[in-house]
Amino acid sequence: MDINVFRGISTLMALAAFVGVWIWAWSSRRKAAFDEVANQLFDAEEERIHERSLQTLINEETSK
Image 1 (spheres, rainbow, N blue to C red):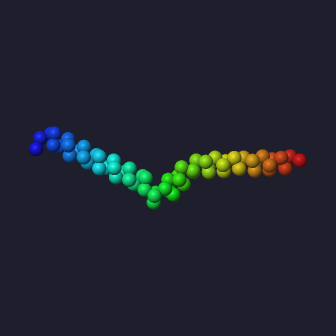
Image 2 (cartoon, rainbow, N blue to C red; image 1 turned 90 degrees about the horizontal axis):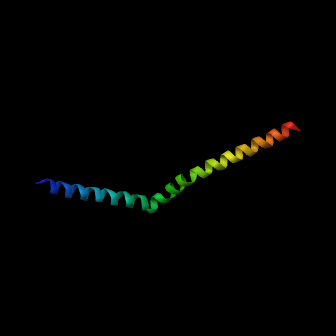
Image 3 (tube, rainbow, N blue to C red; image 1 turned 45 degrees about the vertical axis):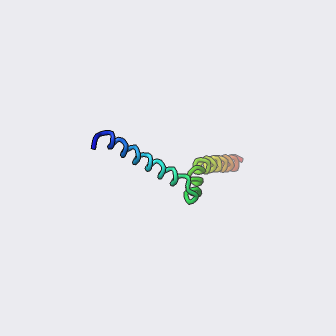
C-alpha cells in the first residue's frame, strides 16, 4: 500500500463526511431548529427596542 492509496481513501472519507453534513443540514427535520436560530438575532433586537421604548414611556410618565 503506497501513499496514493492512502490519499484516495482519505479523499473518499472526506467526501463522505461532506455529503453527510450536507444531507443533515438540508434535511426537513432540521428546518424548524435552523429557522429558530436564524431568527434569534431579530428577536433579541426587537426585545431591546421594546425595552427601550418602555423605559422611554416610564421616563416620560414620571417627568410629568
